[in-house]
Every structure is written in structure tokens, then in C-alpha cells.
Image 1: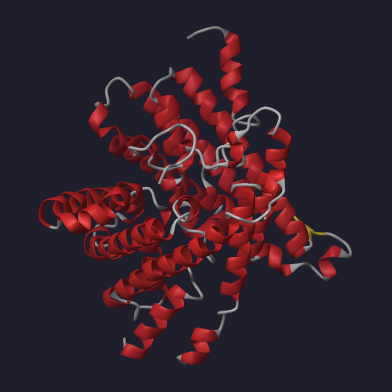
Image 2: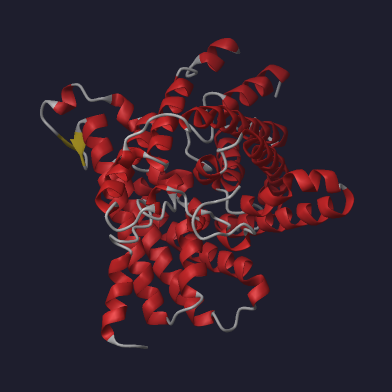
Length: 203
Length: 228
């Protein structure tokens, strides 16, 4: 894998394959935690961190333990337990050694275990690897990082949109979640515009 | 268990009054992702219902054996086992559905409806009530997916369950099967549900703590709106 290809994977994961707006992973935190900019930022940083870390752990487990023993069907079970364990571990380590980071990300960490974006990324990179043998460990990690940054971009953008909604005059039945979803639809529209850009940019 | 009446109530409440998708706002990710067509929406609904009924029953049976501290990992393990079984069955008997659902099939594990019902209902109630609760919630989920899938397929592809609809299929509104259409239809359906429910409840429009995937670990639980 050349650097250009890796950059292509990274950009594609952020723009054209945006996990929230194009693949619908992690909608719950997207709708739940995007009310304020700082919480949106904290949550997305924690998600990015866990995504890269869990991909780093699950990729070798799948490739070197499950596949040689013909245990691929245990993928779901093993991955969710690895992610859950990893999140706990990160929480404990951060609490003990880097309390400042723990204070910033701490409250979001337990939420991430059930975030489908994390499990989705770990599985999708393996699907991509099955289709294209060149898509190895490094490419998977880059993809996971891009997915996390894409989550961050969507969250931060949407937090801005939602702050505007606070003062808007909205029909009674659309108040709350419905109008949030309609605005999410418009934000998703803007991401449709990126289709094809990455392929053209990095042939 | 208790009398017959409450049991029926456990079953029916999931379908309309506490519809997991439209009223409790749980399991939004699969709702948006697989409703591009009616068939994949129905497949997802049935798969999730099967997992929900099985996991609810088993968790209800084991509720006195599972220690309080490790209950969430225990629930996740039980749910993941059933998801794996369903996944293997679908792979063997309905490979087309397996391709249509793709990665969303294993993602049933992290569907908040299932963990949410395990935590809120099955861990406190007997097996009959839990199984019925799971079935009701599953049917409610399937119904919501079915409605959304129908709207999106009819408008976005001009067909229903693969059958072409005259006139509409000549020039379908493509955006409805693209991601923005998913958000839009979901928002509109929820607005409709709000309108219909507005007489009964007032706080329905907000994301309640019950919708939060980590409801039980949240320290700012207020019962109504997330304080974060």
C-alpha cells in the first residue's frame, strides 16, 4: 500500500463513506450528544480513540486466531467482548495514569461499548480486506482513524446546525427529534456532494 | 405468573403505545440503514424479533443467577450468541437477505432495543412476560421498519416488494433511498407519531434517558431529558 492509497482510504472514510451520514452507524450518540459543541467534540475524540484501538486489537485476533481455527462465525461474539473489555481497560488506565484525559473523555467511554460505529468499523475493514488482499493491517488502521475523524466532522458540523435550531420557530409536532432528523437529512445531502471526489482526486 | 390480562398488555404495549422506534427512539441505526427496501426491512425486523424473544427469555430465566455487577457483559454475551445463531441460519437459508443486510446483521448485537429490553424488562420479570414483551417490541420494531421501508421503496424506487408500480417507476425520487431520504422519512414519521400521541404525553419529543444506550450507567439520570 502506497502513501497515496492510504491517503485515499483516509479521505474516503471521512467524506464519501462517512459512518454517520452515509452508513448510519452511531446515530444514537449523533442525535443524543450533539447538542453542544464541547460534548460533541469529547464524544467524537473518545470514539475515534476506541475505534483505532479496537481495530488494532480485533484485526490480528480475527486473522491469526479465528481464521486459522475456522472459527469465523464467532466473530460477532468475540469482537463485542474484546471491545467491551478494551473500553474498560482504557478507562482504568486513563483513570490511573492520565487523569486529565480521563476527565475529558471519561464519561463518554462507557457509552462507546454499545456504539455500533465501533463494532461496524472493525467488521467492515475485515470485509474490505476479504475483497482486496492489499487492504492489510495498516490500511485497516487508517480506515478506522478516518472513520473516527469522519464521525467527529459530522458531529461538530451537526452541533453547529443544532445550535441554530434552538431559536428557530418550529411547528409543534416537529419540535425536538423530528426537526433534528430533518436537519440531519439536509446535512447528509451535503455529504452526497462528495461522491466521486476522492476517486478523482487520487486516481 | 399473574393473570392473563397483564400478559396481553405486555405484548400489545410494544406495538403502539411504546413502539420502540417511533416512541422510545431505540435502534435508530438499523431503522435508517436497512429501510431502503421492504424486503430487507422485513428481514431485519424478523431477525431482530427472533433475537429479542430468545434473549429476553434466557435473560429472564437467568436473572437470579447473574450477579448484578457483571450483568451487562453477561447480557451482551447472551445476545451475541443468539445473533450468531440467527446470522448462521440466514446465511444458510436466505443468502440474498444476508447480502442485503450485510454488516447490519451482526450489528443487531449493539441494537439498543435488545439490550434496553433486557435491562429494563427481562431482568425484572418472569419468562412468559419477558418473551411476550420481546415479541411485542419485535413486532413494533418490524412494523415501524415495514412502514419506513414501504414509503422509501415506493417513492425512491417506484416499486413495492420488488413489484413495479406503474407511472412511479418511470421517474422515481431517487433521494428517498439515499441516506438523506432515510433521515427525512424517519423525522416525518416521528412527527406524525408525536401528533397522534400529543394528547397522552407531552415529553415525547425529547430523547428520554431510556433511549440512551448506557441508560443504566448514566449518572445524570433524570427520567426525562438527558442533561449532558
